[in-house]
Length: 572
Image 1 (cartoon, rainbow, N blue to C red):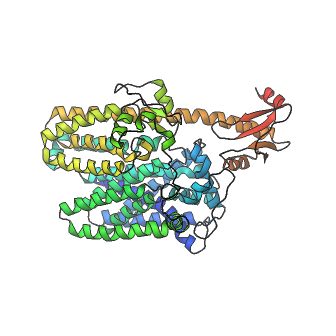
Image 2: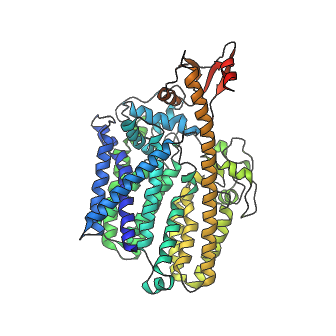
């Protein structure tokens, strides 16, 4: 039963991953041929995903792959439907999402070809981000938007990536099962439940959770890196070019999400190469070197031609505007004052053992808190997608302490295996600390993997009730943290969305007779919301309301309109 579940998880996860990757690869390759995004792109990406499902089913179950293929494709379609529906149930209320992520999606949907067309000049002043940032998420979302005309639904890429990372993690945990003698002690059902719990907690990274209903991309990067780690485990355990290709696809997609992902993917890949070398798997090592190097060139020179190559040609640096002359420091103005003079390691310690607070330019110093405690203000902070200090959740400081305890007990029980696990943790930590903003969780979401690796190590070592108990305690606190973050984020987003929907419904009625004066400030993309709902408007910047008019600012949308005072009074 467990082998069947492992096979199903791997094939379904690969199917979702290759659909996401295909939604990037197809349009970027066709851009070179002067073909903008069309409604047919989504079907090509879907065909790539279905082909991957068939090849994966044959790889895992060579004798009778048809049933596995059919089950995985049906499951992938159902997951897509659920993710698409859930995403459409929430407006993106984030600043960055409305300011430039959605704008990028809209421009791509309108036919912008970033390979050949002139840079975008837009009214909100966010042209620098639209033109020069990596845009894997926006391109994949634009493929969905072009096919459906539903921009809020098209941010389903984030939820699809969470699902793919969960399934691939579960497949990896089932594949790397302990020896039969140890498994008999635990029982197959017990092992299976532990694997499911750990896989779910790995995938529901708090950064992924509190960005799930927005166009923010850090959670997407977290999911893609988890896919890489899971596929790395599978490559270590199973031969096959398909797993290597899937790993490379995840790497190429990650590199084109954010500039920092180049370093992250590089460290993770070097770590996998070292692992294969030390285990004397030289054939797989050679194949990974070849396909990994080819994938990196593909990621930068073709899939990432804009921005990596165009930035180099136009601005002299592939990572512009975050590097080179006139570089913009996007972290400096938000760094708490007491962290400014610290090393990146001290910053991380002070952040993750502090009270959880949201992103702010006030630069207030961090406040150290008692581990395992939660305050109401911390939960409120988790409602937004850009939590700054202690951004992995209010219980994360306690999670770190329990992780250290489990790791020490594991070394006492079996030093050799624990040292190997510690090596993997060091690789993941190194991938995070190459970023000087490692104190800010959304910039280094892979740190979330470390305590769960400790928990899995504790579960894998039998014969010590103390170690098993500590591992369950760690897992329980991690689960409580995830539940707190998920429930709080969903509650606040739903509440704010209900307020916005009520406001938009009012504007539908009020604009029926004549267009409403409207100012969109940073959120020019909100014009698409108005058009989709039939709200008539005339843009006015700055907005000046006349006599007997009142300014109505929409909930977390950066958009204001002038409406008649008596109309609002009647509504109230």
